Length: 599
Image 1 (cartoon, one colour):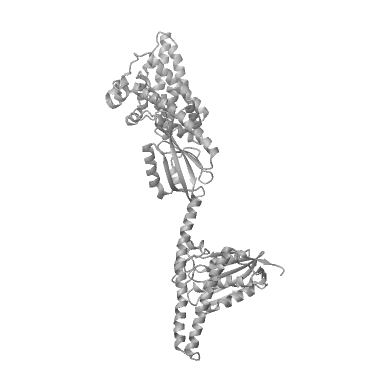
Image 2: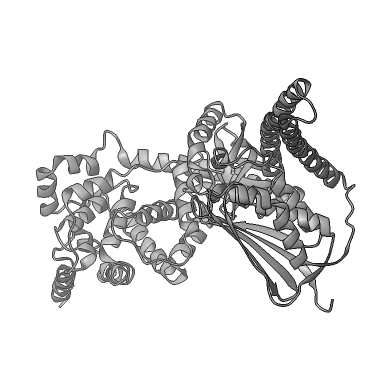
């Protein structure tokens, strides 16, 4: 009867594995005991809902840390098709090369273990058990190895695994590890357990694989275990240093308004960044931080300083450009210090960054202001010289002619015109000075915009007619009245009309439209001239601003007319905007002023 029960048990085991492992032929002196172990094997291993290949690969990986080599040999056999992986007849066996890669997998050092845990901790939602050789499988194998070898010191590991795969799968994994540990203990207490014939043949046919499984001269199991123990000790030291670094980080976040960041020892990952609204925050490890935060043109310079700091285990310090949270360019001064473990190795980097964007923009503005000032002085010299030359020539002519001669009269007219140009130029300069210093005062009264436009057109008539332009004024039927200074408003629109005339080729069209929009009186001055490049639109109203593309189309100009227009309009409580579709597409200037409805 007992013999029949043994036969039935052996047949059941063979039906699951496809072979009868010697493991389940032990403990003959204690009838029924191995059957109880078989029950645990089915619950924790064979019928465990984890994917079959994952179970078998993990069994092989963890069996590297068992002194008795039976388990690694037998389960490698299952994995390559000598039997069934995890007792699953439908599981696809792996190749010899794939298994050699598995059993050759380096034992991770402390930094590798920490990197794997950080990877699992960065997973946002629980994931399914991964396919063989996936990155997640490698991280899980590292974490499960720690839990298997040193379960009491694996608090962080347990949390990381449960976070990555979910609590339910974590418990299923724990049950599987419990069976592997039981199997290892059983083989260690039965050291005479022999290899099956199919395993002997496998090792004979594949000597490289056999050496990896059985190389006692290298004592692979012992070296791997010792290496892992060292890595675990280093990881605990590193974790202590990291906890200390994290505490510093939290304290600094409360104590400073600077941006703070934490980097991995080799700067491959940014572990955290508090961007203070200037840079995007990072709360999970980010390996693409360089592309995310640093413009491509700065990569080489930043990397070079990082490498020098790592080599010296010294301070990282650099002023560099960044990509802000809103995508705009910015500048920071960044400084990071290495956090060292007790044995002097870098655990991570703790750094701070100061926003320098406002300072850099101010420096750029000063440089641009200097450039425009130099350009203005050069242009001013040219503009002053233009009328002075005919004035000097006219004086020489007057010395040689009499007051009643035709040449005398013609010369006086030329000199008068040139003198008016000089007076107008000086008046514009004085207006800029008065506005800038706040000394200009508006003589306000109720002013008809139709009258202002008529006077502005008359003031610009000479240049409009000289260039044979057609001026069209489309005034609305209702009279539009504003509270303003008549002369200053005439100055605004004569400036706009003169500009339109200068920057439109001869025989062009200038159109003025007047309308009411809500409580605003709106005047548009449009032309079909040379247009304004898009890159110059934002600065067109700046003092001394010059559009380089316009230099060949106009007879001079100091770059103060539009600045005067903007400041005078704003003094009236209004606004002015420029619009152009680009070169050769004309320009439109829109002036909006508060209107008086019941004038």
